[in-house]
Image (tube, rainbow, N blue to C red; front, top):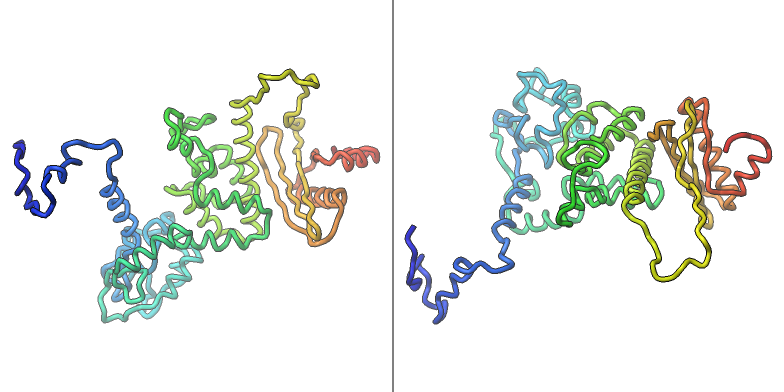
Length: 400
C-alpha cells in the first residue's frame, strides 16, 4: 500500500485548513487515547431507525408477515404465534376473509394475541387499488424527516417507544411502592445480574453461579432459570410465554401483561420481586462481611442462627407483613415450599386507619385466604411482629 507524504492536495484537501495542513490527518496517523465513536454511534442509530420504517397496507400483495415490519411499530414476525401458523400464510392478503372485504378477525387473533389482533383489525387501509408502500411510522404523512426521527429517539429513551404499553400499565398498578421501583428496574434492565455487573467491572464473571448458563442476563434470571420456570409453571403462566425466545426482558414482560389481568400482573411482579431479592440477598451474604477492625466491640457478639429455615416435609411456610400509613395499610405475603421454591404470593391495600397489630392481623387473615386458595393443607405462618405471634401462641392456635 502506498504512503502519501505530501498531504496538501490529498483527497482534495482544501487550502483554508491552515498552514499546518498535516494536523487534519493527525487522528489517522497518531491515534489518541480517547478516540471518537462517531461511526459506531451512526451505526447504532441506523439500527434504531430501521424499526421506525415499515409497510403501509394497500393491496396486501407485497408484505411478508414473517419478516417485514408493517401496520405499526413492533408488528413483525416476532409477534406471530409459530405454533398455529400454516405454510400458506405468508402475505397480509392471507389474513383476510374469503370475500377479501375485511380482516379474518378470528384468525388474526389466533396468530397474534387479542391486544395486537384488535390493533391490526383497526388499521386504516389505503384502498385495494393502491400498492403497499414503505413509510415512516412516526410522521402522519409517512415521510421521514430528521426532526421526527430525533423526537422519536428522545421519546423512546424516555419510555414512549415500542414499550409504551409497559410503562403505561405499571404506573397504574395498585401495589406497593417497592414493586413500582422493581418494575422500573426491570423495564430499564438495571437489576444487578452478573451480565450487567460484568459490563462495568473488568474481570467479573458473567455466567450464572447456580446453573450452567453462559451469561446471567435479566431474561435468564426472571424466565429461563430453572427455579423461575418452575415457579411460573406452578403459577399457571401460559407455556408459550415460557418457551418462546426473547432478546429483551421487557418484550417478554409485555407479552405476559397482555395475557394476565391487572390483579394477576400485580401478583406476578410481587412474586418475581420477592424471588429476585431473595436470590440477591443469598449471594451478597456469601460475598460480603462487615467488620470493625479498629475498636473492640463494647457488647460481645453472641452467635445466633437467624437464617430462614425450611419447613418440615409436607409443609408450606407463609411469610406475611404489613405497612401502616395514616389512613391506609399495605400488606403482602409469600409462600415457600419445603425445597425452598416460591409457590405463590400476593398483596394489596386497605383504606382504613389501623394500628400496627391490627394491620398485621389483617395480613394474617389474607395469608389464611391465600393458603386456602392454594389448597395448602399444612402451613406454617411466619411474621416479624412479636406481640401478635405471642398472643396467638398463648391461645394455642399452633400457627407460628
